Length: 201
Ligand SMILES: Nc1ncnc2c1ncn2[C@@H]1O[C@H](COP(=O)(O)OP(=O)(O)O)[C@@H](O)[C@H]1O
Ligand SMILES: [Mg+2]
Image (cartoon, helix red, strand yellow):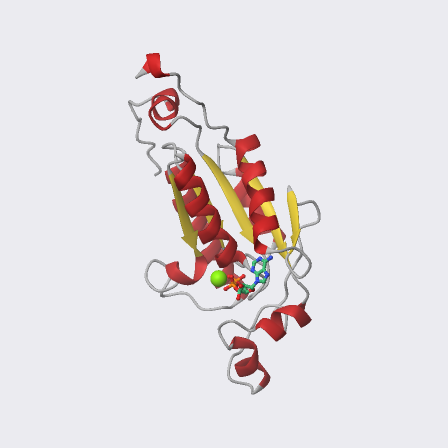
């Protein structure tokens, strides 16, 4: 049986403390599209602006929380479910959470959005397979070509592009700085930072 623990802190208490509501910015896209790069740059930028921000990266979480999961469709669904749960948990306590996760299936992303209970913005970090293969920041595509990795997204495992993302970033055409500017605008719309006046301190 599922028991919901009642939190005594109202949402407003978090907002007052941090100066902004919680929210989830979810970056989806192929390996090498630029999710981690944008997530870490955005995290630093928002931190400097005063946000209570944290980045959750799919690769990092596969080293511990999701270390038992592989890359079958059902394991990918479970991977997304767990990351969404952590993101929701933190965002419901006031954090601005940036998720960078391939999250290839539309249904899984929609489920993450529906369960979030906070503003949720889906960003398609979009680069063609060709661009990703040329970048190959982790050498994965070269290993896939030699048959060294099975079920690799975009090559031997499907990627379903989001039909209606809140933001589409074509990273093969836009600079990192231009992408970050657009992401910051998206965050400022979803979770505006209140500028507190000196009297309030
Ligand atoms: N506009 C851009 N946004 C993000 N990354 C970019 C962009 N242009 C070039 N890159 C480069 O593409 C690579 C993306 O790698 P990474 O962020 O690890 O991708 P992912 O996390 O999606 O697998 C990096 O080497 C990054 O410098
Ligand atoms: Mg990454």
